[in-house]
Image (cartoon, rainbow, N blue to C red; front, side):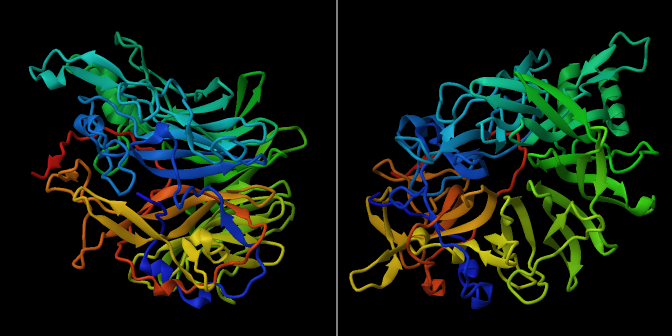
Length: 613
């Protein structure tokens, strides 16, 4: 491969009409983590697919996750196909099973601007003993996640426990000699240098109400996660405080059947997502904060938005906080105290004069289904989104809310029109200058999936910009010819046939997830790559020269699709926003959606590659 830029969303997104931003005074941005027209990964992440940047601090240090291992067999590893960097390889299939080994599929990383050798290079960061995904000698069973980082470089996120196994005495199948389980499914974690601090939830052990039973308690592990940290080392997140009634019933069933299925294994099965995506063992979950002092975490439960009067399961989550200790997120609530008006709404928690956290509902109108708050700056401005019907369709709309005003109401900024549109949008971060980043839909077709783009909103001016309209031409995959014209860079790749192909370089920013005070934005971009050929079993087809074969269209050109990668945008020191017409791009490609934050625990299916003879 002579040059590697692979970028983009879809022709639908690239054909966004001029209504999605014309002349503007917003800053010009450039993507700074390109390397020879590519968004690189460190050697420790060879064999993985998708990358997401989730938080950046004032020192231009970021954290995120790499999600998805490429579906590669041992013969592929030995044959040198482990990287498969030039095209899109299949991802290991996620399944849940108590009779197969647990294999991790999510990996935390850090990247730094001031890295002397590789600025902004995503570098694997071990949590709970995890090994990097390129290490084929060790089967790693621990999924890890980073969600935030403060200016001191202290990182927060979550992890799973490592795999445990019990001999399966009933089986005669050599492939099923063991039952597999782990002690907990999700646990918040803080990492400062090499030191790790676990954040166990207050509820993690089930006490058997039947005092006559020999099994007195069952260690379930509970559930917790750390979502954000401020510069005073206060961590926000959520944790299990009790078990749901139905979850309690399921644990009791496991106790009753402990003679036929090991208790820990039965509990593991009940904690895995079922066919509908829900878990039978669920917990009462509350917003939580932990103060970190001298390596010790002291936790505080934040009030729920209602007083529970039934056996229902209620949830509250803290998702962001500022340096003043104001915490934002969402909670179940009875709007205006009406028990018939049960919702899950955006909320913030702040300390009263006695130093105790108090719950504050962010008022929502009756037409709003639900809402959520993601972040708050030091000026007390909360950003979040609500879901409501607009022109007959449920849409998510970005709002901001001023916690300093006694009778404040939510404000929905206009995006690309003089009045409210039906484009769904969600903010993810706000800095103290009132700059907000997130994502927004970019087309108005009501009957088709709508592509998304990252946005920048300037609260001081009300200006709302598609981030892709603020990029320099070089950052969008263009090259300038000697006559001053711009054209897409041509990426050259060779496949298993030995033939060299070209396709148009392209990149589109699909989400901004964090912005610091200097205006550095991190998030996710779609990059274009050619797709490999797969056989009927979903295995990569390998050519005579040992390399993978690309999928070709009727003209013999590679069909390209998209993979999400972490992206870093900084205000450009020179240059201007690109005005080249994207609609002229006629590359052969199809859209492939980007994943969002999800806690998936992977068990890959066995597969084999097929060689062409």
